[in-house]
Image (cartoon, rainbow, N blue to C red; front, side, top):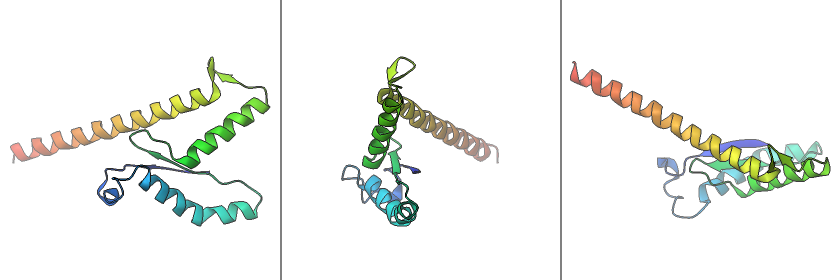
Length: 122
């Protein structure tokens, strides 16, 4: 598994932002071309799991989550914290993405305030 989070409104992805999942699919393909053969030659599965910072999960990430849930069910684990496995994973990952976004915004606002403070007192 290789994980990436893409911010689709970043300047480098603006050309792709008009098509749903275009940036996510691009990164999945790049990761597949880089690592899939090596994983398969060792008898392993490979999942390039890409998430958009706005909360969308890439197709390969969804496949991996399904595979993970199937493994849990095969081992008699159908719930985590009284929630179905898939729901728990989706909610947990969504929370983490939003927490990451909040941290980025907080950091950026602190930088902006510090920059404004330096400009005022020069």
